[in-house]
Image 1: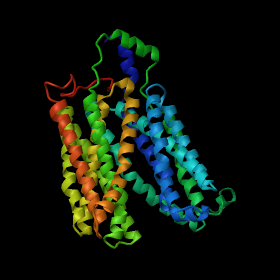
Image 2 (image 1 turned 45 degrees about the vertical axis):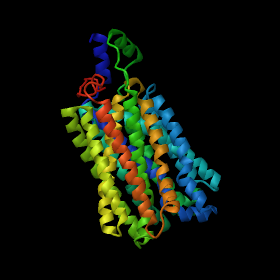
Image 3 (image 1 turned 180 degrees about the vertical axis):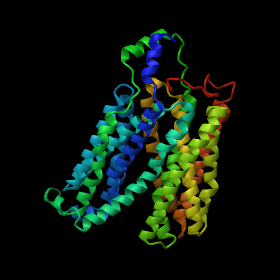
Image 4 (image 1 turned 180 degrees about the horizontal axis):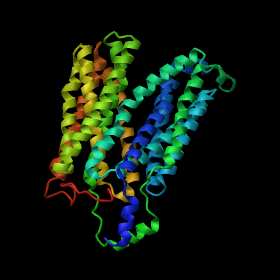
Length: 450
């Protein structure tokens, strides 16, 4: 490596402190996004009554309205993150989702709420590929499992924390704690709750502005590329495509279970809304915190010994564990179901974070943002089918009082088996020593953290 390439390595490398600062900032940004987009989930009735809208319209606001802008901006945000400053892109994302939440807080019609949710999810779509690629680039390959796992902790448990906090703030608002805001927001307490929970995102802007972004000057990059005559290894398209498909199946399994879980406890086991909500919160908090951390630690240990194939086999084992755990839906035992679903959630989130790390490690550095955006879009589209598949199975294939939990078991176990099969194909076909491209079967640590 000559002087130009050495200068590029110094400019793009992260110190330990800079890497952990990026990780903390991305975790906080993810939590702020949850605080901005999830309060509506616990304020359905106040919003519906205030604006005179139906349950169907509410369901669109909670789901379908956000899918298109999220997917579209995931692709655009990923493409831009390969070309522009990540600090500026993340700042734009934060400002965008905060503006979307503010539009919702000031809404006086269903159409205005739709606009606010579209803007909010557009900001969310920009944020994910930027955050994922930033965390990935900040850490060397043998530490990425733990780093991405820590990021997935807030992706898994953040929604529960946000919903719990939204309930506390909404209760305080109903008690008149923010009465002074009524002069410019209106008398309904849900408006002040929505705006108040969106504001913490703006406090992230000064922190984002000082983060190390790992970008070198274009001229230095060009000089380094010209100086290095070694051709870049081609991306293994079959392996990447299979890993993305597996990630989408895992998201589908997770969403199929989590979307209907509170309803299962109320409809099939006689829980009231408070009991179902508390049980749901405990399951998601424990699973979302335990799975990514343990999976990331084990994944890094296996990567150091066996390379990428070690992480793939770990994800395979985690998805296979979901099959017997999901069959607990078939028995009428809510306590055992809660335990099984906690373990199942830990396995799915661990497998998802490991699969994301594996897929990102195979993307070319110059296209990693776009590739991550495409992974995010694919998993969002396929994952959104999970709850619908459960409803269709419950209505047309199965019957009786346990139709819903049995449908979740059918969809979840089937999706888990397909995901495990895909991962096994990756390990046995694409990552065989004689078939793997250079650098796939053994770990390689680069000073530039590529």
